[in-house]
Length: 149
Image 1: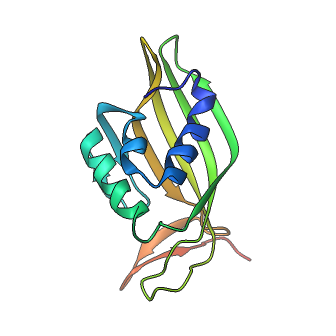
Image 2: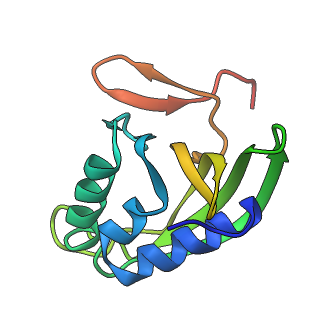
């Protein structure tokens, strides 16, 4: 599956997400694509991307809504582009079964044009942690801010 323009990719990703079929997400990616999720899990091909998303969309993401926000697209020549999109995710199930609060992420997609349109060759998902600069690992990983407040 491909999209007509790089700017169409976030919308196609959201439509695949809401289908609850991880294979529809995987279909947006090249056979040898890479996807790094918010915790650093790294899936190295379409089959792994599909399987991971299918599991999540049928379990802890089964009731989620994914809304795209600010989106930018940059051409890297006639056949490559980078797309950034800020998403809001709501409805995630917490481990205790309760509904977790909404969170924002920024997804970066590296796209390649093939004969039928555009598909992703790589994606990186990053959680947005307002007011924080980086993570630090003391006894556990936590977001911190070094600036004077």
